[in-house]
Image (tube, rainbow, N blue to C red):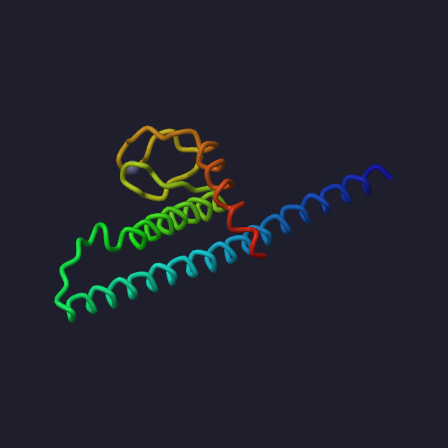
Length: 141
Ligand SMILES: [Zn+2]
């Protein structure tokens, strides 16, 4: 009977690995969709800025860009940060991370970047930041 227990155990382990992998792919797909939505939000804001800037030009009104588009610029900053976090999360799923200095995708376990030699921070910190951002976006589902 013992041998059957062992086979059973191995099968369960294999099943766990498979579902883990499928879960990761599903999660990656979800993250990519989320990222594309954010990118299209940014495009919408660019369009809005362009339209309003042209209107001002037509009316021959001089506006101070920094002030006139303050809200739009801030929104783009926020959305860009969210995209960065999602990119990190996707890399994390693949057991990869981005070198903070040269932005090469490197192995999560690397203590030093193989490309530029920069010392790498502990991966845990990145995971934590990503989880915080993720919780904000989860509410719409
Ligand atoms: Zn590097």
